Amino acid sequence: MSFIEMIKHPWPWYVAGPLIGLTVPVLLIIGNKTFGISSSMRHICAICLPAKIPFFNYDWKKEIWNLFFVTGITAGAVIATLFLADPEPVQISPKLAAELAGYGITDYHGLVPVQLFNWPALLTLKGFIMMVAGGFLVGFGTRYAGGCTSGHSIMGLSTLQWPSLVATCCFMAGGFIMANLLIPYILSLNF
Amino acid sequence: MQQNAETNTDFEVRSLDTICVNESHLTHKWYHNLKYLLVGIAFGIVFVKAEIISWFRIQEMFRLQSFHMYGVIGSAVVVGILSVWLIRKFKVKTIYGETIEFHKKPFNKGQIYGGLLFGMGWAITGACPGPLFAQIGTGALVISVTLLSAIAGTWVYGYTREKLPH
Image (cartoon, rainbow over all chains, first blue to last red; front, side, top):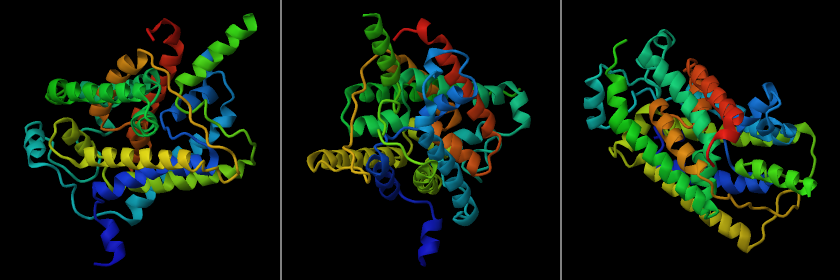
């Protein structure tokens, strides 16, 4: 198998995890930056609509590196999709496939299920909850918690800070409740 | 005294944020930021190729149906801990010769309430903030609505911040 074929296949966790972990020292060494992504959304608020809110009145120009970083993430995803795409459908656990089939979700092409996340679905209650309400919870929750998976779970835990462990446990608890108790109701909505 | 109180509030506001307190004290031309663009590109490729931004992978994680995401986050944390330990032990400096700084994240109740809310959003959208950007990059343009909603959520937090329990 050639190298390019090899990197086109989905990467295993023991390759991806260490690469993500290395982002921590790389950002520290190239500019004393603490790894974190959700803050980019705070900077966007500070730039576009600070509205005299103290939380958004700070010198965002000093934090502009963070917006370069998320622009890079978007560009990296474009590159991976155009040049390194795996032609096979996404492999998913048979248990999950069986469960999702019960809600009519059978298309595994693409990492985002097109049957749930599409423009016409925005006008349905199910689509509104999945895209608009879900997004709101991500933005509100990460800022309330003071960080997301990168800021707390990777950077916070790497520097052995117990509040980040509390935050990470709460992320997981919220996710378990949503995925196991609430999502079955949301997915069974047919309007 | 008044001056002090103001300074402290400012520190509190800044310390609640994951990145605002940690900054290079040197000023650089704007194009120095391009190095963060490159790190972001590498990061985005890993996100897509390891399917970390896959809604399906996140559902498997929260249903304990796959080890993949636990392996990714767990090994990332181990590498992160080792790197930070090495940086501290050998007093590694930045490429500009500055001392690398670490800042404490003070505990507040927001980490519990906000954490639970974010976890719920993560399970519905299948994305934390980084993957939202990457999902758009894979061509799922409708996720830009989710991202805008997340930015709105951030703004509403800022607006209601004084009234929320912390």
